[in-house]
Figure 1 (cartoon, rainbow, N blue to C red):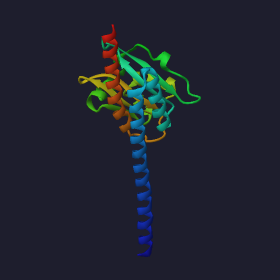
Figure 2: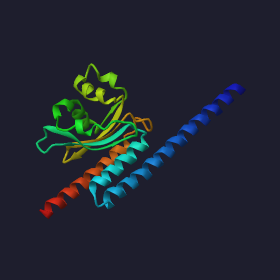
Figure 3: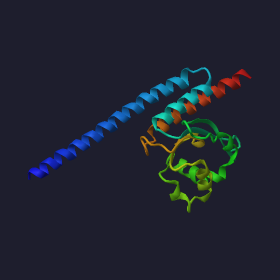
Figure 4: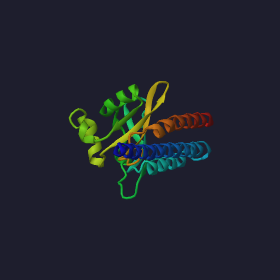
Length: 196
């Protein structure tokens, strides 16, 4: 009986410790989200704001890369428009321009259905999604998390991280930021159109 009590206490302690970490992590996400939104809204240079946001996301998730991809106006191509890379990680942005959107059709189906894509281990998609696998493998991607950017119920891009080591599987930061990022992109697009 005494052993069970000890086990329950230990289990409870581990549960509380894990729960506190989860609460602390959620608080950290909320604080980071507020800071990122502030940068997006107040920074006069949108590219600088996005790059700062990606830096914060990448560092929070302890990821190799953080990025934004945008769909072309004619909805046939996808381009990596913004990128942050951790120290020692090769940039991929230049190689990821004008990808045929059909090469990522499985992702876009998931974006439509769920709003995000999480790949825990790219080796698990090798057989079912060989095109996506062939895009990811040369980039040394082992896992990733992405969240869609949607406008008028159409996926117009996505924001994501490669090889995250913190808050793995938790897309809440990416999902929340995707809304604010898209809102700022639309506002700035309207502003630049008005100036023409």
